[in-house]
Length: 178
Image (cartoon, rainbow, N blue to C red; front, side):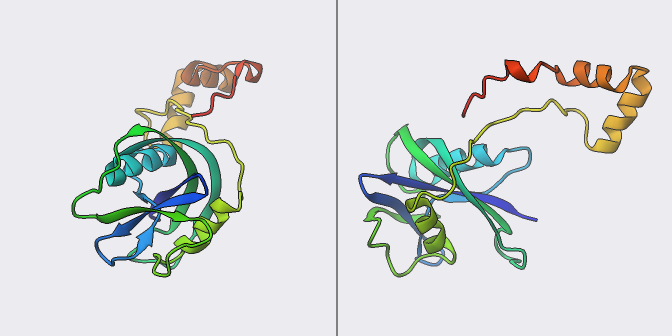
């Protein structure tokens, strides 16, 4: 399964779209996740690479499943982002143009699925919290290897968990939003 992200950047009644070089259609900035990268990191990186802007993710709009896609991403996670820095510029070889469109006047030639996703963002769908959770699995590759480490430790299961993952009381979680 190929996972990717898109970011709806909406300000002053307009949404920022990019015109792709490959098909000359409009879309929200985004792209595929790289190995070891969270979807939040993917979203922020793709916006910076494609249009030169730094964003802070403010809302998860939705998760869009495209299971039969072979040449495309199979799962798209759409966020809303707020510009916090950078300079608007196109990525050579991928983005032809960048343009703000009124939210009630999206272009006709949009990349498949992006019109519905953009409308979901514009209409305020979602509202979930976006959190980066760096669970310390490294250098463990999979659950089986983790269980083997647990069994070899000789510790009770909960004690192993506490030591391995730096367990803290859930009441200590301040819910930092990234």
